[in-house]
Image 1 (cartoon, rainbow, N blue to C red):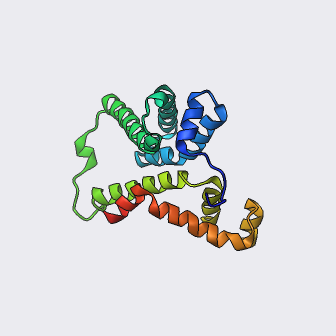
Image 2 (cartoon, rainbow, N blue to C red):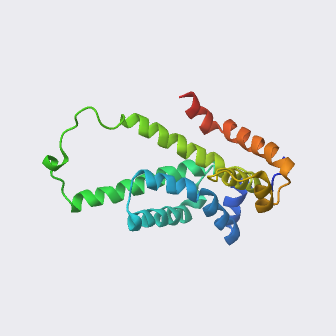
Image 3 (spheres, rainbow, N blue to C red):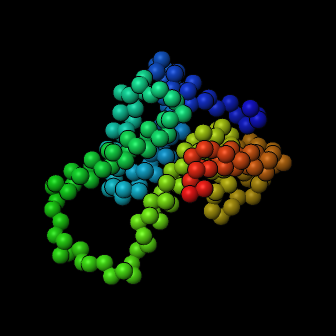
Amino acid sequence: MDGDGDDSPVGELVAAALAGDVRCWNSLVQRYTPLLLSVVRRFRLDGSDAEDVVQTVWLRLVEQLGRIREAQALPGWIVTTARHECLHVLDGRRRVAPTDLADQGWPDGAGDPPVDTDLLAAERHEALLAALAELPERQRALLLVLLHDPPLPYEEVSQRLGIPVGSIGPTRARALDRIRSNPTMQALLRA
């Protein structure tokens, strides 16, 4: 450990949540909600449908938590389950509201970028969120504060997080190294 916080590994959180530890369950939810929301946003669901999907995914996790064999697979399980639930909601919409193809028009070839580009960007975003969720709390909080627009001065970052100004750069570097070394991120960056 590099002294940047004492975040419990996913396996410990899962085991404790299974044993009924509400704090560990809340920690799992807090850690993986950004990942879950990124999947739901990609499907462009409206507010109530998006909320239903999020709640359903967490309910499914409660039901299936004891069956997850490898805790490190939890981010992938969340992404897959969220995709399935989003598709289920969209499928239900199609059954209720038929679409007239004449109203949609025909593509003229000069429009949106290829679907592959959007898909690759979404997969990279999900991998980044999963890697971010695996960081110790102190590193994760630092990176999120450093993303502020406009950028905050290091003095303000130091005050907000209680990190000495001289530790901000090295802590940031360690966090970015951990994200880059995440197996999912490495696979996507090679693609």
